[in-house]
Amino acid sequence: MSATWYEALPVYVRRAVIGQIGGVKPGPAATDPHTSCAAGIVIRGDGERVFLKASSRIRNPHSAASQGYEVIAANLVAPLGISPRLIRSLSVDEWSVLLVHEAPGRPADYSPGSADLPLLVQALRAVGTVQLAPGSGLPTVVDRFGPHLAPAHRSLLQGSSLLHYDVSPGNTRVSNDGTLALLDWGRASIGPAWVEAAGMYRWLVYAGHTHTSAMRWVLEVCPAWNSVSRSARSAYLAAARSEIPDPPEHCEGWLPLLVGSA
Ligand SMILES: Nc1ncnc2c1ncn2[C@@H]1O[C@H](COP(=O)(O)OP(=O)(O)OP(=O)(O)O)[C@@H](O)[C@H]1O
Ligand SMILES: [Mg+2]
Image (cartoon, rainbow, N blue to C red; front, top):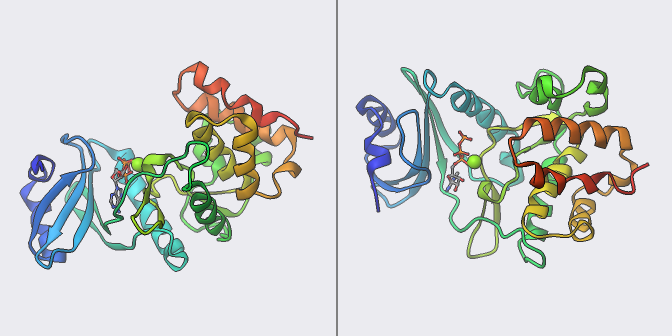
């Protein structure tokens, strides 16, 4: 068990953490240790395990800013019981720090036939029930895409649903008792609910689904999928493929999302 990730944090950050949750021992790292961002488990005196994520606002401003969105989303989803609870968010000098209850388990298995997929659907449907008014503090899908979305397409991606918007297997945990947790709300956004299903489609295809098999789950997450216009799907795909630095052959896997659209 390496403690390097924790010891790489400045001593004043570690002191601030201890000031909030008491003395801790470092547990396993969640990410490789580097100097601008660190994440891993810390273990409190009573044995409770807490996930700690720290980002330097100077050296990793994007990650530090996303922590602000994680805090907003944590409050919105707390009543849904689909994510570990936020314990504290701290701002210490240039560092933003989140302390979250540990979500034990393993990343969800998105492959065809996996028993984790119904759990994922249930969690994403719960997220989609949260409706937000402007001014919630989260970016819209249009904001997220920025210059990747053609100005003429902006009106096609308007919506008021909460979106996790980053539903990769690495941002999930399934515990031994079969509970799925959605983690890492740093890309939480506001937009049309179908966009979440479209984002999930990509990860299903990467996990080995055919179009037919992936669409079964898309329709479970978003029963209204077939009423999303072809132009809206097309606008989403064009922006997403422009934004995400995946190899072109991976991006090809998304194109069937246009199949069968009106
Ligand atoms: N509450 C938690 N309990 C246990 N492990 C967690 C928890 N939250 C996140 N993790 C693990 O830590 C990893 C990194 O955390 P997270 O996904 O929040 O940050 P990130 O994607 O590395 O960073 P960034 O927020 O900068 O995008 C996750 O992929 C997951 O494996
Ligand atoms: Mg993540």
